[in-house]
Amino acid sequence: MAVQTTETPAATTVDLGPASGLSCRECGERFPLGPIFACELCFGPLEVAYDLPVGDPEGLKKKIAEGPDNIWRYAPLLPVPADVATKPNLNPGWTKLVKADNLARELGVTGGLFIKDDSGNPTHSFKDRVVAQALEAARAFGFTTLSCSSTGNLAGAVGAAAARAGFRSCVFIPHDLEQGKVVMAAVYGGELVGIEGNYDDVNRFCSELIGDPLGEGWGFVNVNLRPYYGEGSKTLAYEICEQLGWVLPDQLVIPIASGSQLTKIDKGLQELIKLGLVEDKPYKIFGAQAEGCSPVSTAFKNGHDVVRPQKPDTIAKSLAIGNPADGPYVLDIARRTGGAVEDVNDEQVVDAIKLLARTEGIFAETAGGVTVGVTKKLVEAGLIDPSLTTVVLNTGDGLKTLDAVAPTSQATATIKPSLDAFRAAGLAG
Image: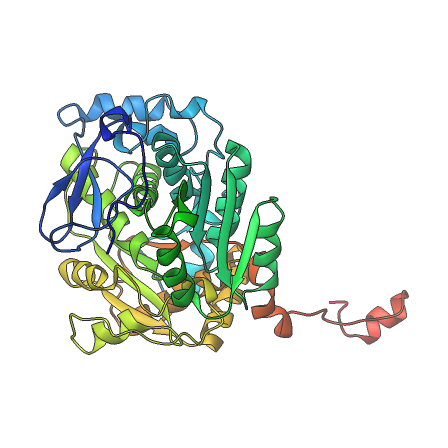
């Protein structure tokens, strides 16, 4: 396995702010900052290590509050240069934390239910956060092409970010994605390549391309730039706590695709505790999967530490990763925090999308249907405490997955343009 994937400028010339190096999540070995993603000793995944500004939490809160209304308000805690806000970037983040009182009443939640609605990002999914981080690493390492393997949302986020920053883009997707996501990925003018197979086939292809001369100068945001890319998900944790008044939520429900988002949100919460920005208290993290692609949920329920790959078969295609890289770490976090990993079937996903839309006016994509559906299931099972503060993530816009709800979301009636016809349709009162 090739760890150093391309020729890049010397690591000593790289300015990524407080990032001090890369650390293996398995054995702890340290490496210089660079476009590497696996440990040379044990092949464990690498993540960014920091010199964080410990010691002045009130001063740090003030600095954050004075920052821009996007993820760069947290630049002192991220692998980005200090002047990141001045560079061409889509500037995602600072999305709404919606107090979902109507949905709470439906579910019997009394302690406060919130939807972190990331559909408000520039390309209408949380992927803009992670791509923004990866883009800054790509700049630092001298890459000229931005790329990814994607289940849809990431392809659009990469295309848009590359267009804004003046990079070439070439992204790879399964050939049978939802048409809305295909169009959104293609419209930015980069190259979009469909691969015959599922996401895991696409990801394997991209790993081969990185090791080939054809991939020289390419920054794959979720492969050779993955350590930096993953850090973008921490900003969800930062925003949630700041929007709650610098308080940790009691319970979070997070969708699982690769599992990286869940693990990085936990990392972000732990950093906030270490920095003294929030009071240390217990919190529970719950993972949410679709039944048709639920390798982590299956492992959790069976008490296993190993996640056995599955062949995806679900309408929640943005979560359809049958061999999730961070699956074992998700299991660790769910068990450590006293949470769980649960799944819902496609019918429950659709019902949950419509429930959220009907109660809160938020049209979620299928991944949001998964988190809301799993939340409902966990409340009914007594695993989520309805008296505690609960935050549920919606990671994308329902306009991207119209096919999921189109069969059951049509015009109530079609009538002639007359009052008599309206009365006859029984819609007058």
